[in-house]
Amino acid sequence: MLKKLSYITLFAFLLTSCGDTLDEINKNPNATETPLAPYLLTGTLKQGADLYWGDVNNFNSSLLFVQHWAKIQYTEPDRYDVSNTSFTTLWNTGYATLITDLNTILNFPEAQANSNYKGIALTLRSWTFLLLTDAYGSIPYREAGQKVTPAYNTQKEVYTGLLEDLKQAQSLLSTTNGTVTGDLAYQGNILKWKKLVNSLRLRIALRIADREPVLAKQAAIEATSDAAGVISSNSEIFQFIYTSSPQQNPASAWFETRDDFRISKTLVDKLYELSDPRLPVYAQLPSDASVGKYVGGANGLSNSDANSQGFAKTSKPGTYFLTSASPAVIASYSETLFNLSEAVARGFIPGNAEQYYNSAITASLNQFGVTNATTIANYLNQATVKYDAANYAKSIGTQKWIAFFGQGLDAFTEWRRLDYPVLTAGPATVLDGQIPSRFFYPGTEQSLNGSSYQAAIAVQGKDLLTTKLWFDVK
Image 1 (cartoon, helix red, strand yellow):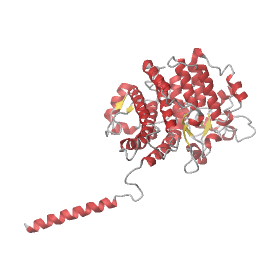
Image 2 (cartoon, rainbow, N blue to C red):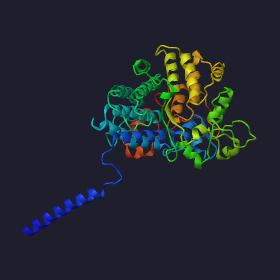
Image 3 (spheres, helix red, strand yellow):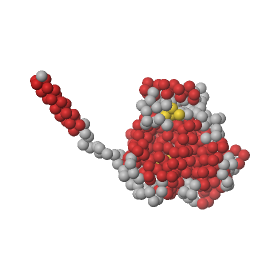
C-alpha cells in the first residue's frame, strides 16, 4: 500500500512539473501576454486598409466587376471564371482578424480601454460587417464570435442591427472620455470619428432605402441632424496613409512585380466623353509614346485577345494609385455629399439635391488634385454632367462610380444599388452575359458551418455569383 501511495505521489509530482514546464515552453517570448488597445487599433486599421484595397477583394474582383480596371493577362477573374475559393480573404480576415480583435477591445475593462476606444472599435466592427454583408448577403452577425457554428442573419437584419450599433458607438465617443493612441487614421481626433459614424449611418440608410423607405428616412434624419455632423471636408476623409515598403499601398506592391492590369476601356471612354480632368490622375499614358493618348483595356476578354491589345499600347492605372504612400480611402467627403444629394432627392431630408451633387463632384475633383475653379465650372456646366432631377439615380450613380475609382467594394455595391452606369459584360465572360451580383461564400462554410450555410441560402437563394442580394431590387 505504501509503495502504491509513493507511485501516486511521484506521478502527481511529475504531472505538476510537466504542466509547469509545458506552460513555460508554450509561451511566445515575442508576443505580449496581454493585448493592448492601441496596438489592436493600429493593427485593425492597417489590416482593414489592406483588406479593402488589396488584390483579392479589390483589383482582382470588384474593380473588374465595375469596370474600373481590366486584366491584360490571366483574365479568368475578368471573365468571372472563379470558384468559391476566390473570395475567402474578405470573409476570413474580416471575421478571424478584424472582428476578433475589435471584440477584444470591446470586452476590455475600462482600465484597459476607455469608452472612446470602444466607440472606435464598434465603428470599425460595423464597417467590417457592412463590407461582409454588401459582398455576400446573409452573414453571421449576432452570433459571430460567440459560437463555433454561428447562425446567419439576413441582410435586412444586419443593416438594421448596424444602425443600432452605430448609435451606440456615437454614445460612447466623447472628447471627455479619455485619449486614444494607436489611431493612424484620425490621430485620436474623436470629433472626426463621430462624423464618420454619422456618415456610415447615412450610407446604410441608403442601402435599405429601396426596401425599407420609412426606416431609411428615419435613419437619414437621425444621421444628418446629430450634433456631431457628417464628414464635411476632404481633410476629414477616413483613410489609411501608407508609407514605404513593406508598409506600402497594396496596388503599389503588386505593380512592383506584376503587370497584368490596365485601367478599363469603359472608364477611359466615359472620362473622354465627359472631358473629365481626372483622366490623367486615374490613368497613365501608354509606354509606347507613339500612341499619344489614354487607352483602356477591354474587360472580359480571352487571354489571347487581352494580350493582343498590347502591353505598351494600353494605360496602366495612374501613378497616384501606384506609389508606396498612396492612401487607402475608405469613406470620402465626396461620397457623403452624394449621399446627402440622394437623401434629399428621395425626400428623406431637406436641402438642395443639385447643390449637394455639384459639391460632391467638386470634392472628388479636389481630392484628386483638380482645384482650378474654371476647370471645375466648365466640367459641371456640361449637359452630360448636369444634375437630372428626373433621373437622380443616373446622375448620382454615374458620377459616384467615377469618384469611387479604386474603391472596388463600395463602387460594386453602389453600382448594384443605383444601376448606373449601364455596364455590359465582356465577350468571353461565363455568366451568360450577366455581371456578378455578389461574392461566393467560402467553401469552408459548407464544410465547417454547413447547417447555418444551408439555412441561409434557403432564404437568400442559391450560392451563385448572379443571385441578387436583398438591397439590390432592380
